[in-house]
Image (cartoon, rainbow over all chains, first blue to last red; front, side, top):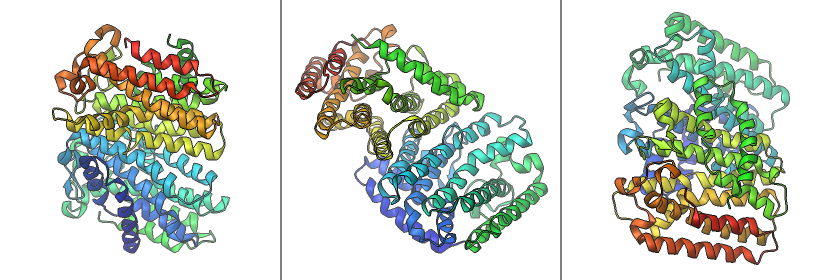
Length: 289
Length: 289
């Protein structure tokens, strides 16, 4: 079962943060609210909160960082959906940002969300200076030239061209995996996890990140459009490099299952409350959206 | 005279930083290098370095932050030039990023530069933890939803519509002023300027920021296209809200001159080496590009 109670807690914190932007130019405030409130699973914030819980800490301790990561995720979706990138009209069942506000405001709203991620951590994340810098470093690296952007560039550049299995995994790790790792690692840093726990949680998160992207690719083929909230079959139309395209659907499923088992194995021996993390790993395999 | 010797010093540091990106996907590395190496005056880095010099510190102390601010400036130019925003084909006499690499890569290269600004400060800026966080805060605020992006949104949204004189100043302060203030303030923070000096330098920078935008607006009308390196008369064609449009050309010149005098007056009484800052303020009035 997905921890929907955490989604609720997270959203109520997130919406409070949004009040900080009431004085912005109206159209910018609207565009920010539109994307942030069009919520979805809040998978990264939930991972952040579950990591704190697994380490016997209050999830409230990591809410600002969870929020910052969700801002970055939202910014990346706005830019990905743009006509010159994935050209998507629908996101979570609603028109994409540029469809509502125009490309100019969509680009700028994405830029704003990215910058605000850092402002939220600086303003609200209650933690010592060194750890705060580590958290900022992790997030800037995960989303930067060697992280998310790099994955996106490989995605865009190799669309319609052949991509090796090795490069597919690098692409997915950069595009999706690193921000998922950041969600778990930043939480572990704030919660002062021991070196060993931190290391294992990072390994766990790397498997999870890949599984998330593989199941995303699979859902693009097999999902119900209404449940998924976006156009199904888009990857094939665009001739995108995905796990099912390169490995086949059945093999992709098997890889995802194997990675989930690996992830679970990695954390099983840790002296932490592993159940919430194991549950979320298992959830990924069965997810419908 | 413009301190071109600092531009040289800065560029040589900047180009060393670019080596960090050699392992990126080629097209991303090319796009980053293309925009960063298409240099211009490096006005913000120069301000950053001059502030250190005025405080009797080595300009080398602030090079990483100067570099981060230039990355942010470059990112903002790439996004501003996009077809859906200012639709510019030329920047500093060369085709704009999207003309060379396509809109998708241009958007992503901008995103990468923004993230890397933070990575550069975290990795290279040698200063205590508290000050480093203050520098990051200043830069994230200057470029964020309440800073640069907000100014851009007002610019885009009010293009072709009437804008009040008050709102024009808010737009310019956000769009241009805040990153110029950040250049001076961050340098003063790193150089441990006293509270009083910091306050006066910030006031100085606010005047300077506005003068920079006013003279930019004036140059769009009066400059030689070759010297300026971009299409002249673009603001009028797009019906942009500028100082000359709202105040008239002569009055705009007078306001700029008055602001420069104010800026000089503010720092004159400070017990620092004021000459380099006074010179750069005077330079703005006479600049040809």
